[in-house]
Amino acid sequence: MNGGSNKDFRQGLADGIPICLGYIAVSFAFGIEASKIGMTTFQAAMTSLLNVTSAGQFSALEIIARNGSFIELAILQFIINLRYMLMSCALSQKLDSSVGTLHRMGISYGVTDEIFALSVMKKGRLYPAYSYGLIVISVFGWVFGTVLGAYSGQILPQRLISCLGLAIYGMFIAIIIPDTRTSRAVMAVVLSAMGLSTVFTYAPFLKAHISSGFRIIIITVVVAALAAAIAPRSDEEGSEEEAKGGEG
Amino acid sequence: MEKIYLYILLMAVVTYLIRALPLTLIRKEIKSTFIKSFLYYVPYATLAAMTFPAILSATDYLVSSVIGFIVALVLAFNKKSLIVVAAASCGAAFIVELFLPYIL
Image: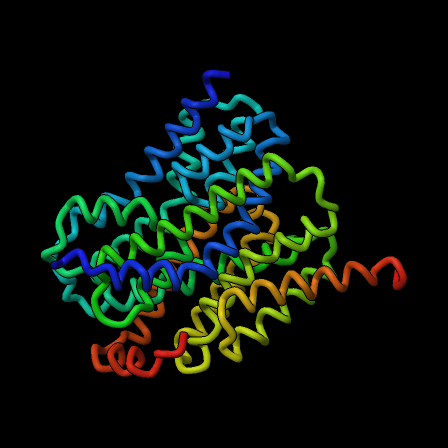
């Protein structure tokens, strides 16, 4: 029974609805961009289905558009998506050690920022069935939005498309900000990551030499390591907050 | 345009391996408090770095992005759900952009 029950699957489907809606908005924008560089609707949908990575897909369009090399594409994807490796490490700790390789390979497919955030915040053990629920509904939204964007994106007024660009950041903010109320360490992590990111984006030398993918990797490793050294989390602290955080 | 499928497959393989290797290879519970704490803080650092300052250029106008950002911060701080925060942020930016022609 280590895979979890039908109930877990349905719970995952329900919890994933906000992700699904957010993904429709974001992948809609991806679909529009993909059609702009000459991808067919099928190719855009296939990209979304096989990758499920917003930053990775958007960045790949630029290379595909100018017929860039495979090596460059591979390195770019590796760097931009390296954060998933950290997330997968964290998720491995939420799984019971009896969960088999096939289930682990299944869950791996859907490690995204948002699915990870919901999975890791879930109280207690993570059951694969719950992850599958999250993945099914989220990937549906991701592919559906891509198709809509690639197919009919040009019909919508630019002003609406412009505003939809905020959706993904709104989701990120909704994930990280609530915990800043209860944990000063989380508050410090969020503020310093944003501060560093601003420096990396605008400082003359850094701006020119560090890509946005690398920027995120460096900041994540430095800030999370500092926080772990300065404010290590005891096990009691974890269970206490898990008990409190039932609302999210 | 056959090459486009090679691009898509290549990025899919790279991305999948990044996700699958840690999940399939790490079976035991990590005992180190440092590593556990590090992994706990990772998503906050990553998502914060991805959000700011990129959010400032998420829409066509700085003003509407800033307003959308502030609305999202306030609602998230008051523990509103993902979809409420995301929708209100887009909605606020949309309203700002509707009125923009009359202000500028």
